[in-house]
Length: 327
Ligand code: CP
Image (cartoon, rainbow, N blue to C red; front, side, top):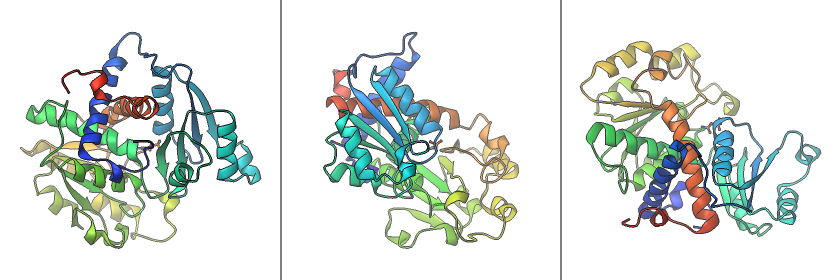
């Protein structure tokens, strides 16, 4: 694995290896001194052409915990605003001997271009590109689902996949890189993916993807769902009217207080996830987001561990065997 661009390219073994390494990194995060010397003397550039809170902060925390030197770059305030191209930006980073590039970009395919164009010879880590992919988000979601699986079914996390788990992903599938990256990773790990959305927020060709599709959230939730992930309504990517009104969307596809109360009283133990940032009161109610069934903050916490794992593995060639002699 030279780069991390898309979960679609990960084998089941590679995905489990990343999750096992992330489990070890999580233990490091619980120590008083939360640091490993693994990337001492290496420079990681965080290249953010699009806004971010969770991904950016957790990549930075991960790099610091691995003792890397960090250069933070955001398009705002850089020469990109004067018209500098991705190529010239990449060549500038090569000239300052960057050892890895973390990139978030509004254009689908920008990290792939950086990886394949030969402008810079360093691992490229996709931190979210357009509507295409967000692989570290899907990995941290899978790590969270393994923890939920351990809590609800007693399946030890290390070495585990997600075989048979039913995961409903609800909302703006059309614009969601999180939905796409989760689909491929969850499918690789043996989970069943259920997409729930209004027809206008589903992509063309979805019938060829390995998922079930529901237009009705209540019907979907009656099908033994283990985890429900609400997606953010991405107003910034919506240039048309995809549903009549926010109220109508919430009533039909939101995890409202009423729908959550029904879920909460069910015998089926169901985890609530959201990649963030949340539109409270639109796709998710505060009752659901702040409940004991919510794994939202665990997702954020796992983000640091997963990002430590992928940085460690891509930059050193390490695997989980470096930490667990029996794996
Ligand atoms: N989930 C996620 O990517 O959040 P940010 O946009 O805050 O990084």
